[in-house]
Length: 113
Length: 113
Image (cartoon, rainbow over all chains, first blue to last red; front, top):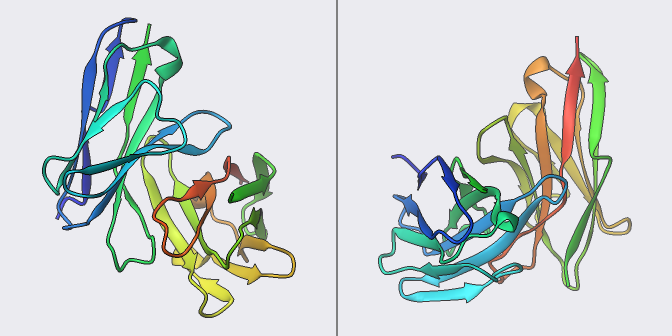
């Protein structure tokens, strides 16, 4: 039981490049989330999904897209990376009956030059 | 809209001393409240949660928190700090029925020998 996994762990991009971050969970959770963590700002919600095939915007969605084609996977895409997207990205998941307890992956550290 | 305020971005205590990390929230409805801990270069791990049952909540590693509605607070305490408690701590709030957490900006705890 791996819980929530994220790939890659580290990535360096140049401005304008694109990439996809993959999140996978093996807990059969319905809900999945993408957050970014910046110093002194806690975690901010980018996008989330309440089920396969559904996504919704969070607090800071601009510049990102997401897809949830399979229940266990949640992809975060950056179409044209900008230096402001340098951050640590965390994926999380939760169950319908889990009283909102979210389980987090280990994070992806992204640097955009 | 929900919000969370964590007083003190850095807290330093001596080993064996009381740990007190402060969290105040605002929510339009009775909330669910959480404390998460993040060790260096890791994801977030749930310490404890309040979901409208007992107002004093016990968590892992000897931590506990008390929900005080009149003060809109959910402070985290531990009677005796250990070196292994050094980490960053995040308070978060969720409206029941909603699926997104709102995080505070975090408090970094240092434990001095």
